Amino acid sequence: MKYSNSQLEAINHKEGPALVLAVPGSGKTTVLLARIHNLIKNGVNPNNILAMTFSKSQAIDMEKRYLDIYGTNGVKFSTIHSFAYGIVRSFSYNSHKIQLIESSEQYNKYSVVKQIFYQIRHKMMTDEQLESFFRVSSFLKNTLMDYNDYKKMYSSVFREFEKVYNMYENFKSQRNLIDFDDMLVEALNILQNNIEARRFLQNKFNYIQIDEGQDTSYVQLKIISLVAMPKNNLFIVADDDQSIYGFRGASSKQLLNFPANYPDAKVYYMQDNFRSTKNIARLSNKLIKNNKQRYSKSIKSIKEDGNIIELNAAKNTRLQTEHVIEQAKKHINNNQTVAILYRNNISAINIIEKLDDIDFYIKDGQFAFYSHQIIQDIINIYHFSKDTYDIKLFEKIFYKLNLFIRRDFIEQIKFMNQNEDVIERLKQCEGVNNFFLEKIYLLSYLMDKLSQLDFYDAILYVINHMDYYEYLKEYARRSSSSMISIDRTIDTLINISKDVKTVKEFENKIFLLKERQKNHSNKQQLLTLSTIHGAKGLEFDNVYIIDLVENEFPSMQAESADEELGVLEEERRLFYVGMTRAKQNLSLIYPKKLYTNSVEKSSFIDEII
Image (cartoon, rainbow, N blue to C red; front, top):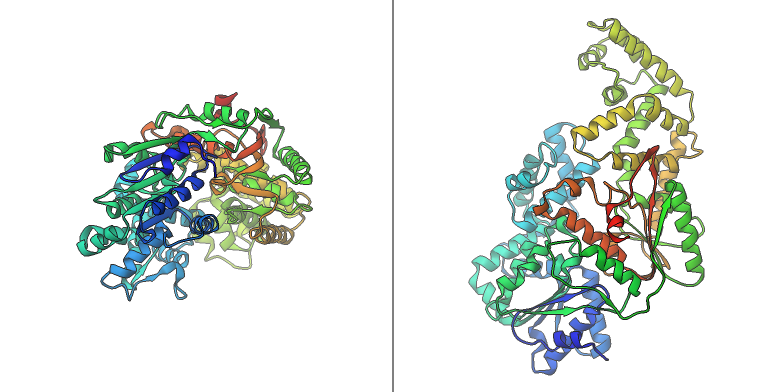
C-alpha cells in the first residue's frame, strides 16, 4: 500500500510518546493498523500491544481490518470501557460479587432513578430530567468533578439532583452494582492504589495506541497514562477539531496539554484529505479557524474543486423537508449515498413522516419528542375540555392557562359536591371575587369551544387562544431555556398532526412513527438520518445539514456560556464535523420560520460565506 510522507512518519514512530493530529479523511485507521504491523515487523511481541478505541463497533472493525490486511494477530483490540472492566474483574477485592447494572436482569438503572426521584418529589420524573441526570452523573465521574464545583460552572440540573445522585450511588453500593462510569473510576482507583496490578499491566502492555483520542475523558486518559508508565510508549491519534463530547467529560484541552505533560513527545500532522472536494475542505477550514483553542492546521484536499456548497433558505420546515427529500431521491436513483444530518433528534421527525417510499437507515433512534411535556399538556387540556369533572387532569393544567386560579381553590373543590363539574365548583370557592369569577367564566367558554374541535384544530386553539404559549414563554424565561426549542416542538407537532381528528388518531400516528424508526435502525441503506454526533467517523457522497437556526445551532447556552468553558467552540467543532462528512456535495439548509415566528440562520453560516 502506498502512504503519504506524513502517514509514513507516523507509521515509523516506535518509542516514546506521540500525538498524531489527523484531519478528517486523512486515513488515520490505515495508519494505526500499519503502525501495529510495523512494530511487530521490528520485533515487538504482538501480545505486548494494546490498541484502544472509543466504541465496541470501532474495536471490532479495527481488529477485522487488521486480520484482513495482515493476517496475523495477538494484539489486544479493546474499548477503554472493556479494558477498565477487565481491570476491575481481575484486581478488585470483591470482583466475584460485582455486577454491571446495565447487564442486570433484576435492576434497570432508569427505573431505579425514577423510583428514587418519586420517593423524594412524590411526582414522576420527566424524560428530560432522567436524561439530564445520567448525562451530568456521567460527566462528574468522567471528569472526577464534585457536584458543587459543577454547579459553579454550569446550570443546575434540578433541585434534588444531589440527593437523587447520592441515593442512587448508595443503592448500587449496597447491592455490589456498578455502571459503565463507575467502572472507569474503580479501574483508576485500582491502578493508583494497587502497585502489583499497575506493574502487571505496565509490563504486559509496552505499546499502547489510542484511536479517536479527542473522545477520551479525563478519567480515561488517566487510566491510559498510568498503564503506559514508565516507558510512555503512548501513541495517540486524534483531532482536537473533532472533539465534540464535552458532555461526556472529553476535552480538546487534554490534547493541547499533551506536549506539556510529555515534554519528549513527538507531534505529527496528517493534513492530506482523501475524502472531500477542495471546495468542501476550503469552507471547513474557514469555519474551524474561528476557534482559538486548537492546534494550527488545515485540511489539504487531494481531490478536484468539486461543486460549490449549496446554501438554502426554506420558507418553513415543511418546504425544507420537501426540498431535502426531493434532492435525496435524485442521488439515490444514481446509487449515491446521502446523509441528512441535524443538531438535535427532533429534526428527523418531519423527514421520517414523509419517507413513505424510500428505504433509510436511522442512527440515534431514541426521541424524547414523543413524550414531550408540551404534547402531554395539550392532550391533557383537550381531554379536560371533554370531561370537566376530571379534577386530577385540572390539577395538571390549571396553572398553565394564565387564568390566575389559586392553588387553594383546587384544594377546596376536592371536598365539594362530586356531581358538579370543576368549573361549577370553582364558582363556589371561598375567596372568589368578581376578578376570579370573570376568569372562571372565561375558562368555561374556552373549554366549551375547545371540546367542539378536532384534535389538530385544538392544538392550534390551545397555543393561539388559551394563553398556553404565554405560559411557555414565562417558563423559558424562568428556566433560561430557548424559545427556539419550544417553537421547534410546536412546529413539529403541528406538521405531523395535519388532518388528525382525534387524540387516538394522533397516538396511532406517533406509534407508527416510532415503529418506522425502529424498523429502519438495523440495516444500512443509501440514505442515512443521523445527528452529527452519530455521524462522526462516517462519510457520504452527499450531505444535507438541516435546521441551521441561531440559538439552536449554536445553542443559546453555547452563545451565553463563559468563553473559558469553550462551549461555543465545541458547537463550532460539531458543525465542522458535519461539514467534513461530505465527499462530493454539501448543502446547508435552514427554515426562515419556526411555528409562526421568524428565525435567523446560524451564525456559523455567516462565518463561511
